[in-house]
Length: 203
Image 1 (cartoon, helix red, strand yellow):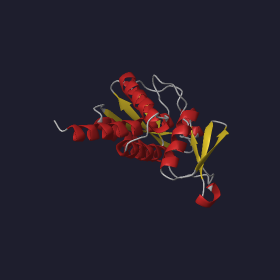
Image 2 (cartoon, helix red, strand yellow):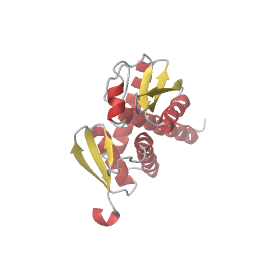
Image 3 (cartoon, rainbow, N blue to C red):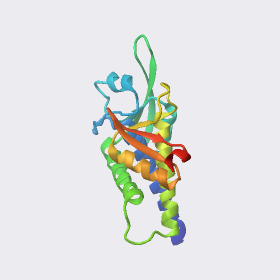
Image 4 (cartoon, rainbow, N blue to C red):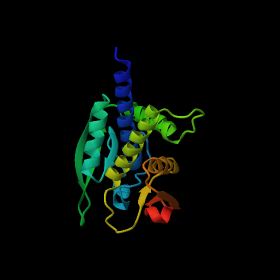
């Protein structure tokens, strides 16, 4: 058995699972989780009083939903995207991600999140190896890729990204530092606001 290649495959799988967890945390877990959808916009949050069984998450961008299905499929969890049109005068589309076992998939994503959080934000007693540093960098990139897929470009022109909770914001700040991306956080109604600062302003 090639131990090195096996380890690399495991780390790649962990990074993919962590990105999926970030996607779900930022969109909100429907069904059993019951968390508020933080980045979907006020219309998305108020539009669904009753969420159908089997919905893991819902997004207002198809690219985020498709990416989540791709990541879950790579991890052995079957999922599919269903498009839903809502609204009366102003119509808009919601992309729901369905899976066969919401509780099992949610548990898998929770474990992936916890491990990624420790790897990114923990304070190891011993210096990190080059392989651990590289793995942390990949986790950092996947965290930002996930949140940007969910949020997309700002339509209102307001600066920054809104994230649902302090833990997610902490991960993104730590990930930003690993990527030399200066990020500042402020607490606002509905969550945390992250601002990516110009290099000269952050100095």
